[in-house]
Image 1: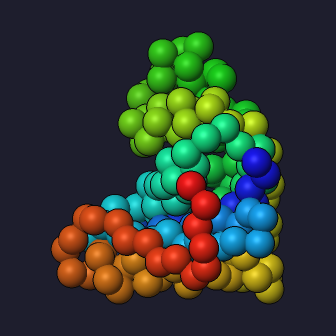
Image 2: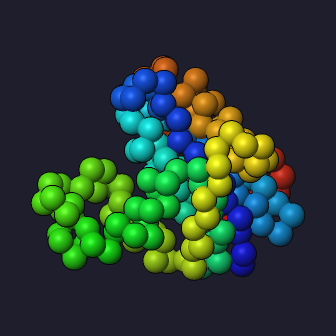
Length: 160
């Protein structure tokens, strides 16, 4: 199965209340995922959006994942192999920030054939704009209320 995914994270203050959003499209179906945390960083929300999107896939997929986060894209494609080789240390031998999320994302991305794409944020890409709106919804519903649960909204049939 082939899936297109757009992800985004947002934070009001950094750190501050944050949210994440993901849009999954496949075979004429669309699914929206979103959630948030009361105190987090934008980078953690960017990683969480990709994690939640990949977690939602119940079988092996070819995934085209679009993100406006260079941190996420470069991290997964360029930095991660070196972090793993150095036992989750940076080139300056300091612990990798967000290593817990990177490790989960690494494991999940190996369950699929993921192609990572960068899109410029707030430039009119419909999938990115929707993911951004969902991330901000996550702040409003979860981040500002001090909740940590995630929510999902189904727009049409969702084949699992």
